[in-house]
Image 1: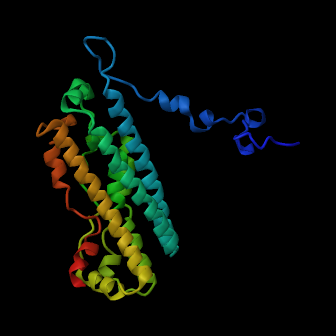
Image 2: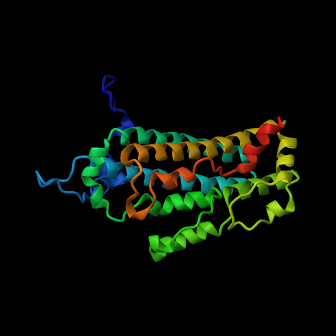
Image 3: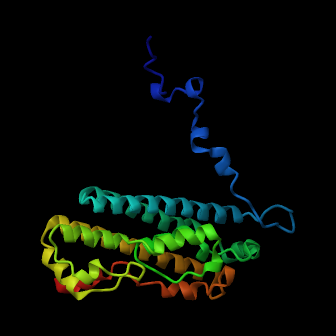
Length: 281
């Protein structure tokens, strides 16, 4: 059998329907995916959904998909650190950094929606609020940001997921355990801390980190973790400014305080020791 050298279609792209019924659409569940944008608004003039609700829904659904991938990557990173495979762990952390840049970039798209355009369908959101994002709450817990979460925001299955994350060790716990196995003098109280509590600065751990910073592999992991922390804070800042730009000082949906609450989450690092040591060099 010969092939036409002028045919731009690679052999691997030949449809496989005849063999196993798999297509691009069926593999990715495209029909199901595109059916998930359920509009709630109605334009009083046309009887159709408000135009900008589509953008709002898609952006937030994409956020949730990226949160799923970030959790997938960070859980894998923890497993790699538990096996002391630090190079592979850092590779997956860097993937998360790229995802965070994409997530931040999506805010640029959302900010093309004016306050009036958002107001056209905002009332139809009722009590729905980003505070109710189960995956983001899981992500916060995994990074050691163990915030108080109101159980009434979630159903039983969601509350179970959040509680499990809240009670589990964090990415930082995996890091310090790895360091301890490598001979870093991690204080016992850091290794034995209550993982249900937020990560707090520890001067003894900072001393140990500074002592090992001349080791390139050690420093690279620290800097990648700092990049991760900064990326999360960048997303929080852009989120606050987007909310202020869109609704000003109005309360958020679901009874939240809106931008005023979101502003309180700024400059609260996940890994405070990595920021405190900056004055030591």
